[in-house]
Amino acid sequence: MSLILWIVIAYVLGSIPFGLIIAKSMCNIDPRNDGSRNTGATNIARVCGLKYGIATLALDVTKGLAPVLMASAWIESDLALSLVVLAAIVGHAFSCFMHFKGGKAVATTVGAFLAVSFWGTFLSAAMCLTVVALSGHVSMGSLTLALALPVFMLLTGNIGFVPAALIVTVLLFWRHKENIRRLARGEENPWLKPKV
Image 1: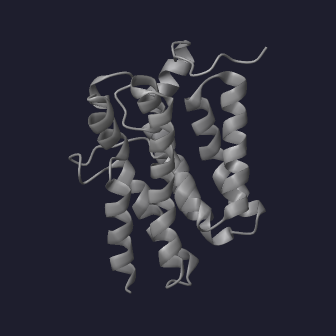
Image 2 (image 1 turned 30 degrees about the vertical axis):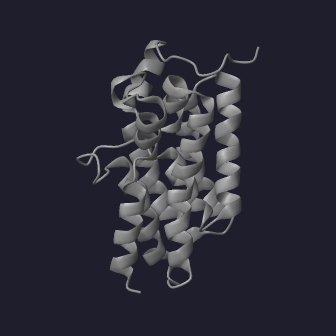
Image 3 (image 1 turned 135 degrees about the vertical axis):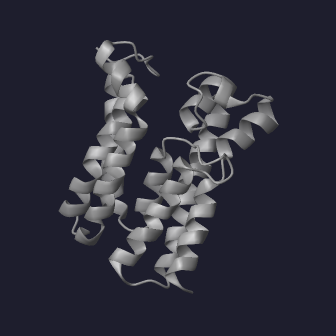
């Protein structure tokens, strides 16, 4: 299969707004009008319940993982596979099913990079979860993951995916710009009570 086809498949799968589908079908709620007005797992858990947030998280990870994992059986070049990785992530952030709007793409980033670097992604996600547990802010954990990803791609020997990881770092920081402003003002709502 051609690279272009895999890019299209990854983008379309990445564009599926599972959070919106789950919230509307299971809770009769449009998450774009409630909570943080985001379709990601964190907001779905807030407005619809933890189990629906977990389901959203799992599906958002899977839609990043699946197309990249399938494409990796056909594509040997790290650069070419990086384009498939980015297509899935961009699909979530700029969904063709939501007028090119979307979520912050953290879960889909984890899924897409898991397919190309298990340990690099695992260590980045572990840092993310540690920061969430300590700070109570999912946004801080997400930004930590964004910074850690290119570092751990490099440290685990997946040098070919460092450029894609750097692009994703910029994308995730841009998608979290409002969170960053709220964090700077001390106005960001915590997801968990920080440990003291």
